[in-house]
Length: 172
Image 1 (cartoon, rainbow, N blue to C red):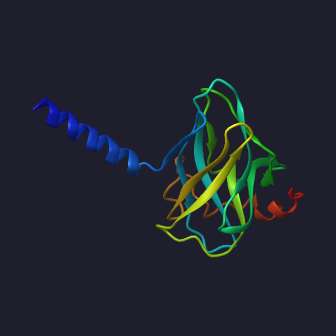
Image 2: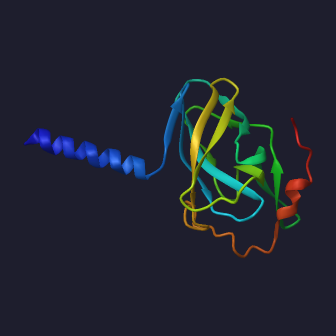
């Protein structure tokens, strides 16, 4: 009887883990909860959490995806009361400290989407780390406003400068 109970618990655990989103491990790094919002726009974003289970700091230095003409690492910053988006060169991932990519903070930016992102769609994004190398994960697309961990909805922020994404130099 104990064996059946243990097997049932394992199945429930595995199903729960799959429902929570993909978890990908590579070179001491673990990437989980990779998601995006559906959008008919030319640009899109992806969010995730990266854990470093190793002993040394690593850095996310680049991102690639076939869904857009250009894919970059971005963050938000407040300037003169206006939230602005800007490209950043890298995100440090320290041992024991999660690197959180979330609305209002760091995110992967897809510029010049080849097609709109639709609910239920998945697509690959390759994260390129300084030490761990390339890690490809699947991004799951959900309804706008439904997948964020902070309850933030993007439907009414009047003080967001969405055009500032184009006011920076694009690296190669």
